[in-house]
Length: 81
Image: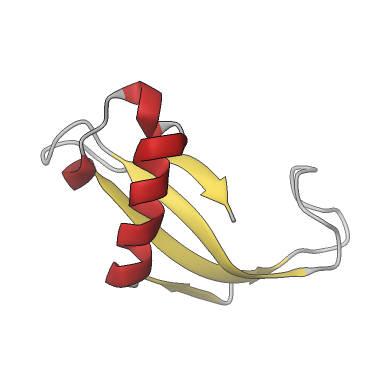
């Protein structure tokens, strides 16, 4: 991973889509328990777990993290573009 960051405006936009059309529309998570991080990373020749293109670079790739409540740990619920 070459860069990982949080952009509140972009995160809010992704959260809106996630809650209306994504997994958030069925899992009952509350908006305050969702955050989206962005990243840039390079993929080696193996392609990682097979879901990524080998020898490629991904920019502004999003990671949707959710938690059950403010006391719970964050977990990755979805990722991609």
